[in-house]
Image (tube, rainbow, N blue to C red; front, side, top):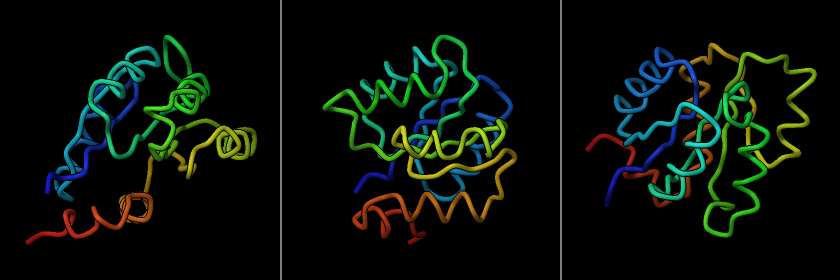
Amino acid sequence: MDRPKILIVDDDPDLRRALQLRLRANHYATVQASDGYSAIAVAQKEQPNLIILDLGLPAGDGFVVLERLRASDALSSIPVIVLTARDPQANEHKTLQAGAIAFLQKPADNNELMDVISTALPNAWQTAALPS
């Protein structure tokens, strides 16, 4: 079975690189997008198992991306974790209402992020994500 694929959407290349290293160390495959427009294009092409999404993006913020994902039959079932520096009081409820499964504050605690990811992925992927 292939490793679960996670799409990282963030305009900060250093954060994308750090997340990619963290996820690969935990046996996940990764793809990346740096703005709202390419997030949808990459999601359509790659069909990731999960998306980690920033809210503050050029070319369509995270809320626009969530709306487009939920409106697409092919993408609407992909779980989305929002990872953002934006104020949780103003954004957490709105994010969850828009279809995200979790709202995490940057910088994310590694254990918390991995727990949310493993909870979000279907059980079939759980064994694939474990070291053999």
